[in-house]
Amino acid sequence: MIQGEQIPAGEKVYSLFEPHTEWLYKGKSNKRVQLGHNILVASDPWGFIVEHQVIEKEAEVLLSIPLSDRLLNRFGDDAIESISFDKGFYKRENKELLSLYIPEVIMPKKGKKNQAEQTEESGRTFNKLRHKHSAVESDINRLEHHGLDRCLDKGLHAFKRYCARGVAAANLRKLGNVLQEGRKRSTRSCLKITRNSMTREILSPDKSKMKGNE
Image (cartoon, rainbow, N blue to C red):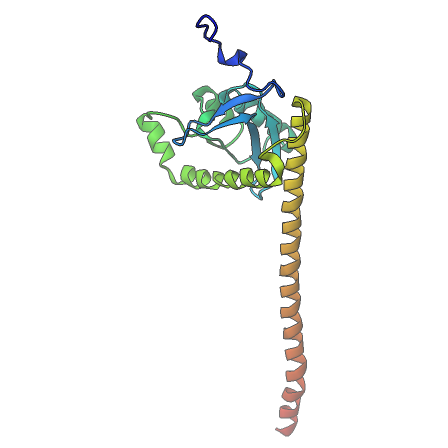
């Protein structure tokens, strides 16, 4: 507006109250735009969030190696059998490097694929693990329901703290669900065992009586 100057996206300020705010465009067909920060989330096969990171003006392709390194250091070199990423994380060099440490690296390629890539991504193992990756959408939904659809605190430090508390709340709720399900299974098992023992006690006198009559 002033002398027709084009301001680089990295220099634009989208909020006078929260200058750290970023303009987030997900690239989807609805062209929805959000203000805030992207959050990197990693979950285990049981649905617990084991890693999260507030992203500050970083491309997704730069995050896969540091994330995998943190997970391997935490859980051990042989603890992770497979790891799955969204398409935005794809980079051939990163995928090849991660394959040296993790047996199955699911990292779909954006755009046109060659014959080898097409064969790999149409394979049974790839599709099976890729299908499990869809569970991260439920993780995102859980986080939004635990307050991360909107941050009420001020400042970038408070934003990160708010996100960490949201992740902790989501994990605590998940743990509570697991404990409740375990108690339900235990109760059903006890009822079944009690019913069986009562049946044996009732039938035993009858069987001995029949033998005495013989």
